[in-house]
Image (cartoon, rainbow, N blue to C red; front, side, top):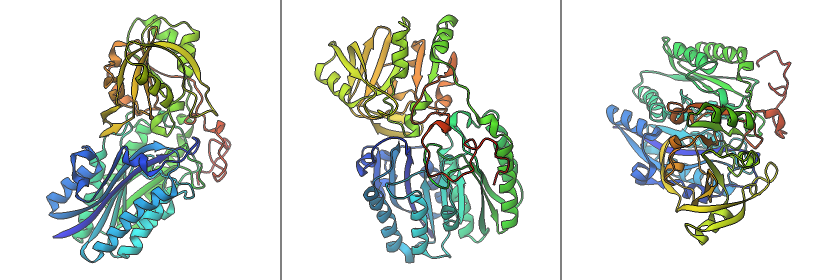
Length: 492
């Protein structure tokens, strides 16, 4: 029986938010080692499940090492990354003589206090341990920061093919299928990459419609060609200030590097030719609110993408709340806000109490400032629930609902993702019942909210995940890079 070493490590950095993510950020979300990696505590429907399905069918034993997930946030502490890296490397050293391959399920857009490409260093370190003949397959998030270090250390690389991301298990299965075939001697995978001198915010990354849908049709066509094992495009977490920032196309071929590079270049040109279609026009908040109220329908989704928790922001932006109060909004609205102090105050006061307190603007002072409000505490929670994208447990700390007129403000101690409804729903709030629903996401929310939304407005706000990247203080990126250099005419 063939044996394969498995580890999963997920974190997406935003270098424009203050602070450092400690190992506790992983412990509060997911940090499992050894056989516990296969336990229900990890959640379900993720890359590991796809890996296991293929491995079982192929008669391959999987040796679990680590499953660590901290979502998106500030740079990871060097010590925290060292702990996680050393667990993987130690296991590789222990099992080196008994394994035939390695499979890693990574995000790809982590950064630490001192490292711009820690996952690349992790893969390179694993390669040093297992040697050049042991195949390594890796699955990455679509927003992976692809680097030459990552490419050179792997034998096969695959990425998500959906945005909003729903193909977690399928991505793991695709990576494991290539690895299984390599172990049987059926294929000899080689990887080609093309780094493109462009970057774009995530609002138009949706793979179900143009312009991204056209590119993924091209990916499907290339993937179906004889000799091609995998093809994808990595759209790169855009809110990380690193030297190698930029989109990448990656193609894996069976032994034919010229074919792989040719197809990677074809995909890169396709993306480059559509670059201006990825620019985003936002709707002023007042215009969006008036249009939603005038329609008489509900719910209207207000996408506050500049404060996207899933893009690494703290979620403490209160711009929409401030505007609704200025407008003397009388309808129904669900809003979300990260504020540890306000959450603690609500829990201390208790349900039914009336509080006057400053909310928001405390964690990202470069973009927001606190706003004093008066409201009634309708509900409190411990903040523990299960996300649906991906299906996994989450703990956002003490949470509460503060009612301010027709506005229900869902406050959490730690950032709560709103790409699904579960943060609202665990507080007994149903997005379908409100005229306005705030989601702090640039696009991932559409898989859940899109089918029942009366309309969606991408509202014009500022913050650490804003769509106009040229307004953020990038310092390390290599120029020229579009759209910072709008007259750039050559893609690489």
